[in-house]
Image 1 (cartoon, rainbow, N blue to C red):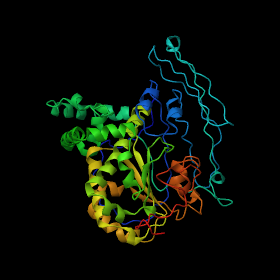
Image 2 (image 1 turned 180 degrees about the vertical axis):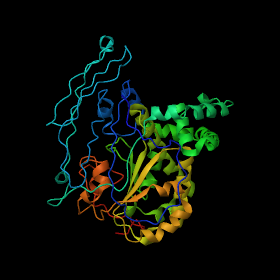
Image 3 (image 1 turned 135 degrees about the vertical axis):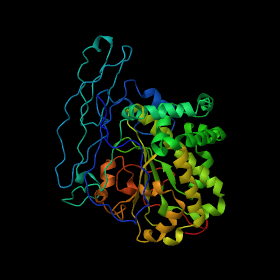
Image 4 (image 1 turned 45 degrees about the vertical axis):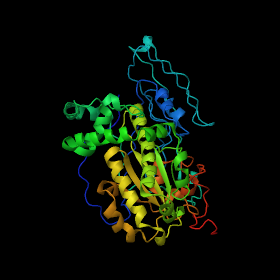
Length: 439
């Protein structure tokens, strides 16, 4: 049994010039159920010390069952699906593999009994009783008005089967390895939790094509060799060095993931003070802090990809509540552009999408600036949510929020009931003042 995957050409096409911003039109959303790998993911999850509230539950998802937080959002104006999915049989596993999975989804949901697959059950594997995903209705979301219905997402979300991608790109990977024959990839492993193997090389081929992959790999190896300390701190979840910067540029890798297991970066742009940030810190320091978070997110995406056998990417949620046109700073845009180009080069296939929420009307005015400094591929993945004030209104107005999250996994200031953090601050936190004595 494999994961659903697209029949599209695997090589990523060149991104077109970003069009003027507009709200997305409606179309159905595709949620792909992942299949956990044959070996336990507990060891892989334990490698990362990045705070992740659901990592243990994800690792315990039984073989043959979908990721248990993948609650399918119903289509607009349609009643939610409440019937359990049909039981499926797991694929045969290695004779020495023992899967002992006990998952309690909630107090009102059944507890999955232990499922032990031993050598005796390899020939005829027993059916697995999969946990039933709790259906989410519009009324489950905070502040949802009576009679509210879900909106359809204006774009398709999918995750390709990484094993199918490896087969389809086997010749390109072999050619890339031959081109890198003079490079001992193993010597670059210090300070890195990412194996430099076929999956790693695959990302470069998908992002750069067969001709550009070698140059990108060599540049990335040089970058990683020169930044071993940063890589080690990112793997350990040690961001103490960047805490002073986070006081003014409020961004964090969130403890919850999306329904498709995507790591989430939350940015409270409207509460930040990038002018003060650039007054106090150099452009290089700001770029380094951004690259640090991208390294953390890449580690999480790599771990999830190997565990689920789907090409998992990150999601950025940009909260623009309280943002003002005068808050913007050209120095910050320059640093952001540099970091985005670094990310595109050193972390291929990392960004799935950036969604701006609580967007002010002036965004079209700064779009030309963004086009001058940001990579075209990054801007092509930018979307706007129709919710304009999630502090007082329901997130039901944002189809991305209700598709990618559940009420308890979406942070409170974006319309969910999930807790915020020390860095992100309370839902009603004030904007960062320019002057320490300013109210």
